[in-house]
Length: 253
Image (cartoon, rainbow, N blue to C red):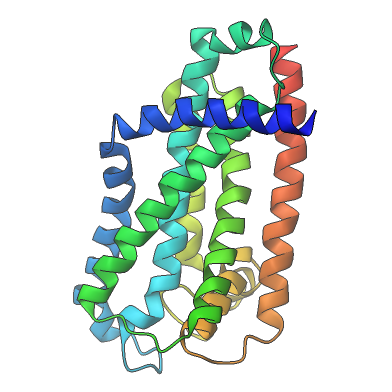
């Protein structure tokens, strides 16, 4: 059964990956907005922001990476909505394949596409002056956090794609997610914010994730932020997965 499930998922992932490779502009478009924000903050606002660090690109990159993921998962919702509205899911239902393998194919494709976008963004950050003395274990830890965050947001995208009544509506869910890093420690220290805003910023998931990635890049002790970030990522992933599967069975049944 497990081998059958993995084989079905692999075949369907190949199908969705072909859609992405035929429209590479989606990956480029996903990277353009975070890069534009990075250029804006790096060369326009960065000089006026005191972060206590020597390089503003080093400070803001973790937030930019999260924005890249939030932007990228919108395409997963749109692709999923397109499949549902075209009737392809009903055709899959008549075939001897594992039901949830269809969703996992979209999720794994999202993960692969977002990783490519993240590499592009990091490349531009290096050109802007980003530097890190972090070793391989720290980079692997950063990659692990980004993978978890991508999976968590992608399963939210699955819910949006299955529930939307239009392609635009399917992708619109990502706007609040893209905006969330701006009310966090991603671009400015939270202690510069007014009381209520600061309270929200310090207790929302993006801040702990950004702080953890920043500490890993800076070769600093991660502390309790790492456990909080991990708890947020895993918690969102578990809840979003359960909700997505419930919506899927209700929609396709």
